[in-house]
Length: 296
Image (cartoon, rainbow, N blue to C red; front, side):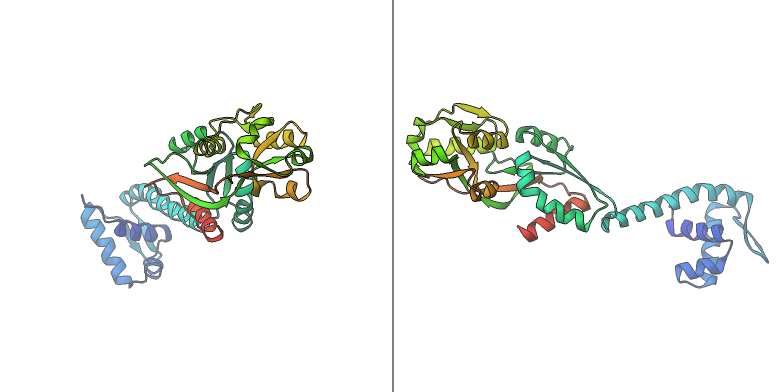
């Protein structure tokens, strides 16, 4: 049987209100047209669905049975349309974000603050972890979007959009700044205690590639997972660290950290946002991506 959904919608409205005229007003067609559609459905099903009385349209026993099923279907469609409308209006929705603690604090949070102010009913979930673990979560469908340090190994299943240009520098406290006069040749850093992030962090991979391109080998005295812990150790005089300039503006301004300029200079790189390629993000995620693109 070919199901004509429009016939069942008309049947539902007439049955719910007991009125041909109400259905005519709702569907913006004439009362005879509504009557014709009801008769057409009755002929198709081979039963009478209504009894016409002076008080309106009354369901027959067969009509009552049909209405209980049609009611569930039509109201489910209405609820679905309402839910979709809420998503489009961002009255609901969820965004699952993956990022390192550092990237989340210095790059993602300003965007999330603006987004939350505009769409407070959207649920935002944040997962902090190593990039390799976050990539697994993204591919497994546990995250919607990932923010990370670039560059990264290219993958055909991922789409990465650069959103912020950053500059990596070497930093120390005042003691190490004075010892080096605030500048040093890259190869001479080997004479000082160094504090780097552990692999497989993207930042450490970028540093290693920079050293390799300049034929320099540096062996850090300390290797730490946490970027913030590295900065604390550098402030306390444990050695010279590798940092992202844009993330330590306050420390450079208040002179708790000092840039030690290195030759050759570290090339600039980017922070990017990554999604699964050829997979359409939900409406809330798309709105966040649009906002970031507009302000990046």
